[in-house]
Image (cartoon, rainbow, N blue to C red; front, side):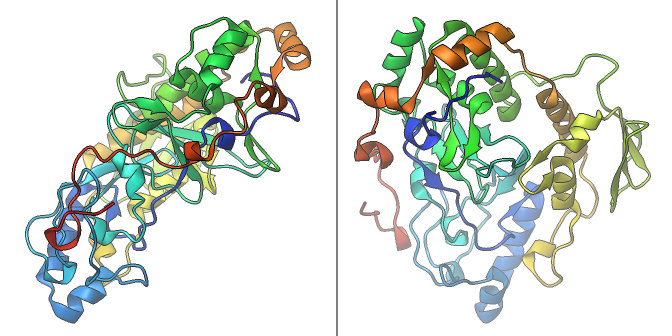
Length: 396
């Protein structure tokens, strides 16, 4: 991580000014680690009628089975009231449900209390979402995550890297790229700024601060480390691997329904009941994000029983094979993230910290800050009509 620190460091909220609160489902059953069980839950919901369907839906003040709701941007779900709905389940989509936990969601606006349509309008294969996870000083785990998937993590803010689909219009303070490129003497892109923020962001009393530097060597080293972090967090493209001899394997078959998880630090072995996975580096087991160890939270999300009689109780009868592959990859990602990132030499760090910070005061003097209010609001991206409640066109 770059060693540039300064009390006058700019805030992430100013560098990436447009943010959206994470979607709020209001009920757990529309999301799950397995897409098959989501289709089973949908079928069970539609088999019920009247009051039984309403009860299974789990109504809240924000959403009931009789709510009139517009189509989720980019989705294909119907828009009639759910109490009268019929037909197949909308195809589940991948989402980031918790730190480092990719799950599935039924992309139907009728099932979600607060879907944040402006977030879905800019979600595509070019988008990268920066998600704040730790805002209190001393909090465990990374302060900032990055994902290519729509994030459901709460309570942190979500900051899309681009304000429009197709990787258009970076969500950066106007003039920031040009100012940094001039100071550093380097060509810069939006992903460079995000990569730097991933390794430099630190919680402070006013929110996440992102110390910046005008030292080209320190900047290049930080961006290199940040791009590696970005690759590991997004997990798209080439799959990460640990060197031979350190790669985790299933040493004893996992049971059909594992109920317990424990770690043997001496043997570097993860036990899922009588099943065994090894080697698992201690750093991977100890890796924390949010409220605890990532591996424990990941396992609990797949084994915690749903309340009987609810749709959430419809889960896979046995441990699906894809979960084992996902577990091995997650162990690999956490182990690689826990390794020390490449750092510039101590002298360069010290000189950058003492003589060449790019402070919030300097950004204000350059006219980069404060950002215009329009930069904190979503851009207009209505390139196509969106279906409103009951099949009517949405008026936005």
